Figure (cartoon, rainbow, N blue to C red):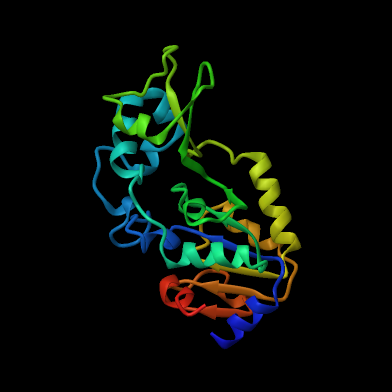
Length: 234
């Protein structure tokens, strides 16, 4: 903790790269843990349901699953979100790069956030491109339809879809320019997101996760603990 605090204090271009573990402490379930989404029983495998081809083929089932399991409204930022926003305001943190789609970093006050997998808070008509709120999708009786008749699709990256190239470019840029990279709450097994670590050129790579990751041996500091425990001390 002493080393981590010193590195943060000295940093002016730190980047935090986070996964599902950042939001689980706000009550949002993750995908791959023992109680995660992928361990639950559904009519189809979750990976199939949240694929682009399934969304096109069976939109009614897709949206039913999406509303029940992937639309986290009413949750609040936790200590990790709040401390990251404070570090940005104090001039230590340059950006947050996240795999989460819940928008809690912005809710906590973070300004520069690159959402690799999109956000449930952004929803657009596939026909006229009109913006619709997450509440509009949540309250739709079945498939959310725009006034023009087009389907309102969440701006989240489904399986078989590519990442937004502008978001990916900016994430790579800030990681490459960072003087400290803190990676937290991610198993680092989902690509291409996990591959972003290769763009970091600095000598202060910090990994904070409950379990071991494939990148532990490459890190300069590894902490196996919950993010809440660590960030409550920063």
